[in-house]
Length: 502
Image (cartoon, rainbow, N blue to C red; front, side, top):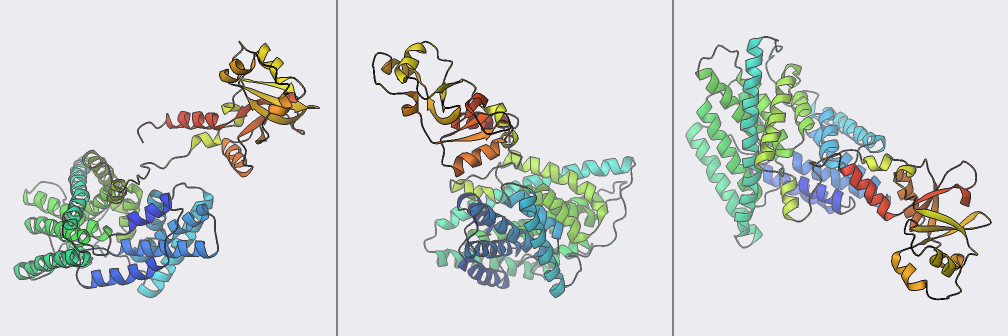
């Protein structure tokens, strides 16, 4: 497979734990797959390899799950950065697709890892951009430019539909190959089909085109050497078939490079077709091909900013950024309409492991304790009889908790419910509030953040937190309310209401 879903699964469902052997096995399997002609990319394996190394380091030094997950994301971003010589793209990839939350604590390791990986990659492979393209010139602000932007919108819609087709086709192919008994048998059958397709292209056009990562064909499109629209459309279909067959039958490789290839063919074919119409517009095959690359990657993966920044870094032409942003945005929206899940998440959803579709601040965590606490309480001395209290409050349901004090010091908390009132009002137990109060509580200030309250409840193994005001030692007269699971849940629900469709 292409590896990234497994990394996401490890982050969200396994506490960032990936077996160390994955790095070795994935390296060998991917080298064999790409080297023998499977139509797959190299970024998926390197993401899984980098993530496995990060996870292994975290397990060796016994880091907590949160820190281990950051190392997994850092390894993924570093792999992308080193593979494509795109440090910013590596950081964006980790932020958009890997990290469950973004903060200075999680961002710094990712940035350091991608920077170091880029340096090492440039040391061995040089600082040149992944693709060399001719100068494209700046985008002017005139009516022609406005028409061109509309054409990029159309291209974005086309690539969005193509991305949805790619997402669905891969999983259709996986289901189809599952019908063939035996992993080795189905893989051999798939690679035979890919070999026949590659050989047919060699016989018909004198070049394999779709084998391996396909960078040579992409370079030809970006340099204007390959600009016949029927051939480009044929290459799109061939690459789609070859990649889905390779991955569906069990080859080890990524979908990023195939997405670049298919995006370049769609964009190039679209531009070549427009040129054939002799429109009075400056239509450029390389420009539309690059925009198509970004739109296909963004549509298929759902990583909008990653697609834009990576294609910019891979070509190093700033003039292409504005059209890319427009096309990628349209592509992602069209793909979401046709296929709600991305190339990376559909596999996990089918496995029963859904991944959040949005990454936004948990606003309930930054609310103050005073904003979420339950104020339906009363504060009473421990010496008061439980029976007398219940008899006096049998019809008063406004009090849900009793904070029990002794010499104005908080010694316990007791929850009051209607069943307790009805069951004990006619009895004489001789129990005091101090005897009945629970001791599993902690004390927090009214200015504390909900995040800190939750962490304190968890660390103290408490059932709830008593909220107090003032600045000195907490006393019974300072009690303002309590925070339990119900209050935390209500705070979460209030936060979710701000983003109901994410």
